[in-house]
Image 1 (spheres, rainbow, N blue to C red):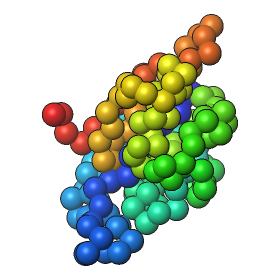
Image 2 (image 1 turned 120 degrees about the vertical axis):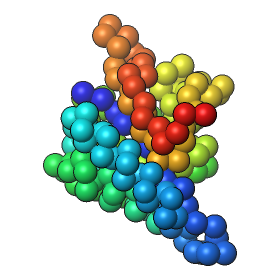
Image 3 (image 1 turned 135 degrees about the vertical axis):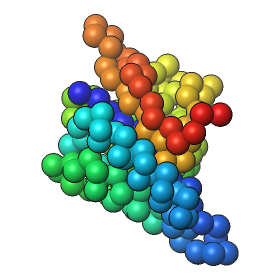
Image 4 (image 1 turned 90 degrees about the vertical axis):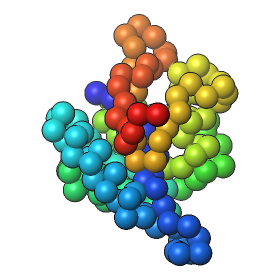
Length: 153
């Protein structure tokens, strides 16, 4: 059981797409990461996303490979500058939920879940990458279990 955090794939610039949908590179990188996650047997029950075009597209691509039994769900509290505390209080590590969102929200969420503080950053996400958090036995805090990122840099 785990909680998965995904930064949306690389998006187009606003002048190319006012809604900033995924770029061709972003689409390919998300597909590759999703395929690797599928091959590793990652089990996701539900994928939540912010509703922004790039997050929605990323969630749909991930769902194609990971086939969440509870499908996709738009949530309103995970936009880039939203307060992380309300969302953090609802995280259930036994639910196998994946959340697809944006920076700085996601990196602040990771820090808060692990340390109880929103900063400093404890993990640097990449567009299209997946971070897996899992509950530590006999602890209130989770730990980073693994990560899949599009590139090593």
